[in-house]
Structures are given as structure tokens and as C-alpha cells.
Length: 287
Image (cartoon, rainbow, N blue to C red; front, side):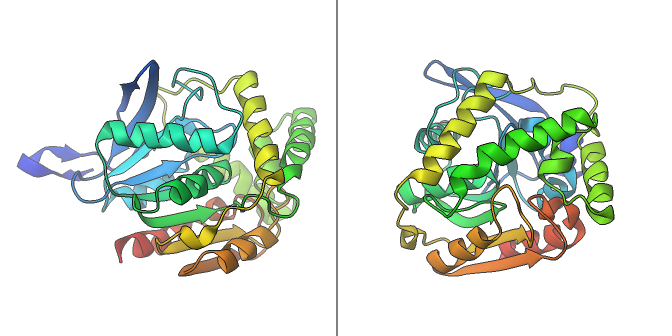
């Protein structure tokens, strides 16, 4: 926590970030806000089945030391009302409605997995809105094997259930010694916030998200040359959920993009290597 305007304390810990809501028509969007106000805000787009409680504080906190950070539940997720759409494009429209309601005309985006798909759709619709774009653990519309995410997800959820583990330990991390250790540490970090926790995602919402991802994977590719924002792309070298080759694909398609592939890691490489990724993200966003 640091000093803000008028010596008011600025919250830079995601575990202590206050939670708010804003109404757009008949939908109420839940969000958390931290870091110093002013300048271009950094909006975080969360993953499949993720809510406000699923962002790694070791990623958000370093960004919030320098920047105004906003994390949100899109329509039908967590504490936000309404129903989850069955297309990524509608999720992007909902995100645009939320951002517009907050009054921002320029944002930076940090996204992971499904959040990266929504971010891509958003920036294709509104390239003028996004100044910097971070895409992690994600892939392009119509990318090879994107439509197989649902099958991998269901299999790993079953494996986790049988071993009484958190599904993210299987979905995000390799099952070698390093991956298992990183997975347990990540899940533990997600419990650092002990009060005012978010509502969990419902089974129906989760299923709708998977339907949207499958349609995204089978859809005609977007023209990513429309992405004018400098873009940072990151993944592990062995992502089974969203195959690592799709990060290379994004890098080829998006002009002015940079690519980082972390070794011996899977879908959640940015969480396994948070000590390396967070400073890179902060530097990239601050250029």
C-alpha cells in the first residue's frame, strides 16, 4: 500500500482490493479496482471458469504498483448478473459495454486463455480503444485444434476429481515435479483474499463458455492485422489446453507483436514463472 492523492492510501494488494458493481441496462457487472488512479487503466480479462478470485496476486500486484488496475466479471460470471453468452463476440460486446460504462476511451489489456479470445475480438471491433495488449495462454479464432479445448478441460476436471485436486493443477501445469509444485503454490496464492470473496461460476455458465470456445475454434479467422496496439504474447512450451503452436500463430498474425515461450511449462506458464513474467509485463505496459 502506498500514498495517493491527498495522502489517501492507494491499495496495491489484490487481496485487499475493494469490490464494486456498475449497472449497464439490466446487467450489473462486478469488478475490483486497485493501484493509483489516473492515466490509462489496465483491464484484466480472466480465463475459462474464472471469477474475480482467480487472478494471481503475483501478476496483478506488481502492475498495480504503477498503474490503475481493474479486474471484472463479465456477464453471467461470478457476481455479475445475466447469462453467459454462447459466442466470444458477444462476450467482447459485453466487455465493451462495461468499459464504456466506466467512462474509459483508452485502455491496456492483460488477458489469459478465454480472456485472450475475448480481448482479441474486442480489439478487432475497436482497435482504437486498446493502447497495449497482453495475450497469454490463448489462440486465434479458427486456430488449429482450438475447438478441442472443451474435451481437454472435461478430461482434466475428471482427473482432478479422482485425485481430490484443484482442476487448475491439471489444466494449467505439467504433471512433472516442477509443474506439480507450481500448481499447488498457485492455488494457495488464490486463497490469500480471505474476505469478500466472489461468487463461484455456475455449471451452466461454464458450459456456455465452453460452447463459445468451440464456436470460436471452428469459426473463420479474424483479420488480426487490424490490431494496431503493441502486443505481448506469452505461453508455456507444452500447453495442452490451448496448444503452444497457437501462440506462434498469433505472433505471425499480429503486427508489432512480441512472443515469450517459457520452458518446461503448460497453460499457466505465466503463473509458474510469475517472477519472470510480471516484471516483463510491467515494463511492456509502461513503455
